[in-house]
Length: 452
Ligand SMILES: *Cc1c(COP(=O)(O)O)cnc(C)c1O
Image (cartoon, rainbow, N blue to C red; front, side):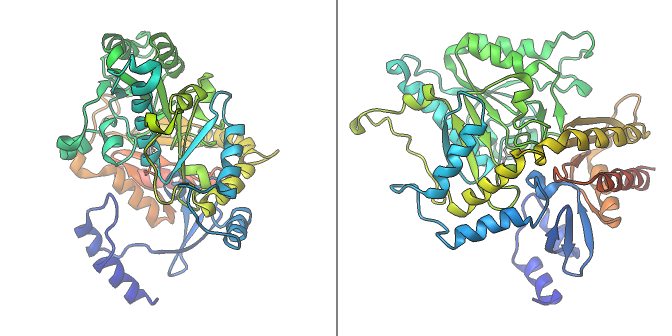
């Protein structure tokens, strides 16, 4: 397709997600044609360092022979059949591999196609579990406890347990009501305390809510270690552990949404590993195929699975499933992806060293007069820019400063995308130290250009 025809199709036909289309139609967007390693290549042959890892899902770089070959080999067998009534070689194999790699206790794998659906599945399983568990003794447990600033996806259920005000404002009338506990956002503490002396006061609010509504709550849902889409908000060490202990005490289910933080991103296979926490329901998506094909998995325990077993006529079946559930091509990609992540000297083993290198480079970024805070877990970073470092005052949102920083980086051939005034770095986990240097040097220049 020639460039003019491509732009015509871009401007006249394609509606982009999370995009003001009037602005888009007026611009000349970068159109990606190819990619390799951590490099994206546009239709003019111009190269960009992929600073956001194809929106947080690329682990080992683009166009990787091992994953591409696994997809091709599967294509020679079957692309898709269905899991409704048929078994699948590729889907069964990956389920076994994922369960083997997951912490002990998570024994069952339910597939879907995106992070949002992985969360919907977890919510519906948790809800139905309590309808059926112990002869329905806890049937009143129908609601969810979540955090403000949480992001769990864009479908109605996943938005309902999210805590990003903008989405609730628009879609509020469609959502179900969840309990919201304050987000542990230490830089802007929701309960007005200081990390050194607060004794995790924000957790006390969560605990009080959970205790007050124990018999109404089906599950607590959380993004372990870091609330991603809200702006890479790090939880204080020990927070997740305390949430798990509280859930154990009150017999609430814990849903860990590791769609962003899981699969090596934070330096361990799962982020919750770092707190020794095993959830009752685990949501995985983004990195699961290394950024090649859509796939998601919701893992759960025998206890929960057992509550769905019974005679056909008892109607305990989990009545949920998507057409492309367990797609064979995606599962083949996921198997190859997981092997690359976990093999000796593989991608996961290399994260710590790269993350340390990135962390050292970020010290200079943190010293910038308009950088309020740099937050990092492994190779997941948020750089919050502020109008006034001393008072932590934000820029007026209409000024789109985060966006301007990213535009300045893109002009220097590094692709970045902000979350409001938080600039995100989520490169492929295999990014080289030279590329990390380029990423942070460019970010420093972009900060100067955009913020002075
Ligand atoms: C991205 C994300 C989702 C939603 O995933 P999609 O594939 O975009 O539906 C859910 N939870 C978290 C934590 C995410 O970062």
